[in-house]
Length: 133
Length: 410
Image 1 (cartoon, rainbow over the protein chains, first blue to last red):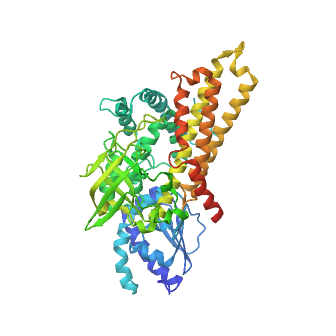
Image 2 (image 1 turned 180 degrees about the vertical axis):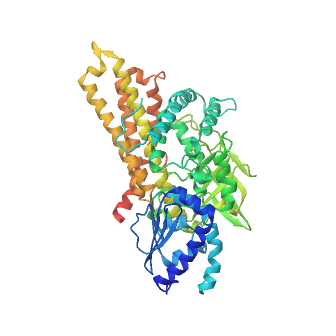
Image 3 (image 1 turned 45 degrees about the vertical axis):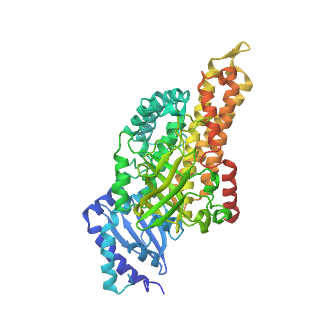
């Protein structure tokens, strides 16, 4: 049984998380400066989450878009959940083929330190939605 | 001498950076490495040696942090730019290229797993260093383990019998205790301040049961061997590191046995892809030496370039250099943008480019005749440098077997 029971539920939980992340001005500005679109292609449940460069600030999109992903990451919903709980290290997950990625790895790895506000926020979001931590 | 770039998308800024590094390679790195080549290994790293002056100049312009992300103060270059800069540095001196390359190893590997501790203590201080005070090394090979340390996902890599004598890390409380020896061919081994050490944590898993630990080399129990005396790349310091009950806080163990094999694969892919870029530079340097000589040297009443066979040979060398650049650039661009990487392509690039560099250097010596054999010539050093490339970062024969296994299992 996957952590996220269906796509809509996953969008609701992770949408809330990414919205919180992009509310952080430092994170938003640094992401905007990178000038890239990041696409998460998730399976089990299937879905797509986009962090778009946007016109004047980064934007979040859930589901299909017309955008092109500069960085594309393929992963399972459960691995996504474990990543935000810091139970899964991205470089290790990449190396062990749990996560696959296309795009400039230096930029991807360089963005990891920016994710701290999301790591901090996620346990409370899980609690709110009754998800395991 | 520059080259015509077949990539029409190269920007003015990229060309400018390439040309700036080329000037440094031509005016500083090449002459220094030729001077240092004549010295005994201990004199190369003596306090008053030219080596340190050049090393500091390299740090000053950021040559040590080309691979590191911009967010920490690193170069933040794209894979294409990394390749362009590495080719130029290597054109000037493969010795210094490898020294700068391994110097960043602890910070580079740490940047893959960037904890606050590693960012504050390893990555940022290294990026801020403009004086060559923080020098890393890649401490992987051992007296009894050379290329076989670079065989992730092969059958023998999980054989406990093979790892029995390996350098060990044992958890004791909040510290790892390190015992063993890293081999004489650890680049920057006797001058490094930090080792990025690939160690055995769980010997029952064979070499796959390893860990990657950043070890500050001023800890009690660390000692060094003498600088290694070798055929080529003599300006590159290499030497043993001994660990005798060295206690390292566990925060420095950045990868443990659970993911060692997978991260080693990424390391091998990155290192071999870079070697392709490096030896494109060596091949080009050798070709250019031969071309310049053949334009001047008169034999049989005419310049060498007027002889048909010489033109044929020069064309063959030119063709190899261009093939090296095209292939190694494609591999750097692909594997630096793909995770997990396709390591057998990186290996193919390393093997192809080092073999091509040796072939071009060998042909250049032949074209340059007696002068090519002379210590007065640059090609004599390039030939010896190129020879080392067939063995370092994994002997080409062994690497071919590793890549061959990956191909048939694909």
